[in-house]
Length: 331
Ligand code: SF4
Image: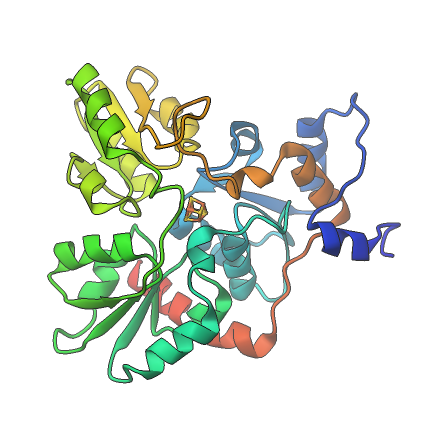
C-alpha cells in the first residue's frame, strides 16, 4: 500500500480503478495537479480529444521524445502507449514517468519480441540495425539507430552506402523507405493493426465521391494505400502538409485521433477519415490501445503517481544510445 493505494491491484489491472465523484471537474483537477507537482502532460495525436485539450504538448513520436528529453518537470505524464512512456523514462531516469493505463500497448511493438529479434540480428552481423521507435526497450537495446516516421529517411541516409541495413519492426514503413532511400534493407515482418485496416476498395470509392479531395497517408499504411496518396508522412508531416497545401479537402489515412488537432490547424478545410475494412460507427480507424487512456485515468495517475514506468538500468543504458544518436541526427 502506498498513499492508501493497493499497488498490487494497480499492477494486476494496469490502472487505478477508483471511483471519482461525478461532480469532480477533471480538467480543473488535472490543471491543479500539474501545478502542484510540476508535471508535464505529453499527449500523442491519437489520444482522445479531451486528453489532447488538457495536454502541455501534443505531438508525434519524434516531437514527444524531443520534449521528453528537454523537460524540466518532475513528473512526466505520458498520454500515449507504453513504448512512448518507456522512451521518456529512458531519457529521464531521475524523473517519475506515469502512464494512465499500463495496458496501452501497441500491436507493432508486440510484433517484434526481443528474443526473436536478437536471433535475427545475430544471423546478419554485418548489418546496421535501424528500428522504428514503435518498439520495446529490449529491441532498442539491440539497435544501432532508432528513427521515427518524421526522420527515418534522414537516419537511413546517414548510414554509409556500402553498409547493409536491417529495418524493424514495421514492414510497411520499411517498404516505403526502400523506395524513398533506394537502399535495399532486410525487413522484420511486423505491422500496425490500425494502419493495415484501411480498405483500398472503400478508399477508392470514397475518392470517387470526393474527387477534389487529396489522399494523405501515414507510411505505416500498406503499399496499395500509399500509392494512392498525394502526400505520405508522419502525423506532424500530415498536419503541416494540410496547412501549406492549397487543396480544401483531404481523405486522411492514419489513426482518426489526428483529426482533432488537424481540424484546429485548418479550420476551413474538410477532413475525411479514410475508411477501414470494419464497419464501425465512424467508419474510420481508431487505435484501441491509444484509446485505453481516459481523462479519468489521466487524473488518477497524476494524483497517485501510478502506474509508473520503471526500467532496469543496464537495459536503459543500452537502449539510450540509439535514441540519443537519433536525437542528435534530428537537430
Ligand atoms: S496506431 Fe498502430 S503503431 Fe500506433 S500505437 Fe496503435 S497499434 Fe501501435
